[in-house]
Image (tube, rainbow, N blue to C red):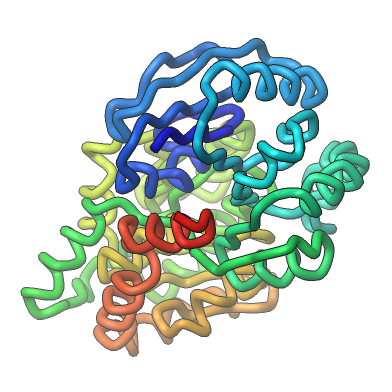
Length: 355
């Protein structure tokens, strides 16, 4: 079986690569297409990466068409429906789309240039009527796809979580899950963007310190907000409590989770939030802003949510997570094994393909 995976801006360790991790469990030749030339292979997935110039989606969709004509894949999996625009109907009929998000008001508010993407939805709707089906990475995405795109078929597949996090969860489950009450360690993993609300985590941290005197916040990731975050740390005199680690490679990332008490995020929008899934698989509870797909993690029983944009609500949620720590941790590990295990995600996608 030969699969062409269309994944623009693909780079190991980022959203597209994590979302497509289930490909590791599908036998056959797999090609990953992406719109830059930084990288030539991904050894984790054992796939070839085909280079392409970084152009607008009209040009890139023609590149995808030529690629399909050359590779002649049995199936096509795309995380970018707009790049399927120039495919023939016979190719779309053996294609599955796994979109990673919808443009919402939160995007326009925190990144106004996102409004430029709105006209593309007319083209996405056209493609959606022709493809074999859609895979939804959360119930939030399932509802959005069903409401706006109305494809012939849609299945809830979820995003996969890599095995190393389940191994950490298994290790923690074998032992009695204990909290180090002497030092609360909060962990944020993700891009440093306004949309992610990571600056709020720092702004609220003095209130955390009033409740938990030895608390620390560890921030993993990079992005345009980095300099502002460093300034906030300096301004609020948090240099001994808040640490920005930048991007951490795959080998070191589990250690960041292993050292954490809770995963936290104040993101204003998420279509799934892979770090919360990773924390659940690691048997680590999360504290999340209760919006979009983030509130699903709360409903699934391994995260505590807060709704108001205030330090008081955030501190209260952290306290609730600590009070129910073992219950949340065990629930996360159990649910993640059923929903986010990569081989199970692969089976759901193959079922959608009709294979």
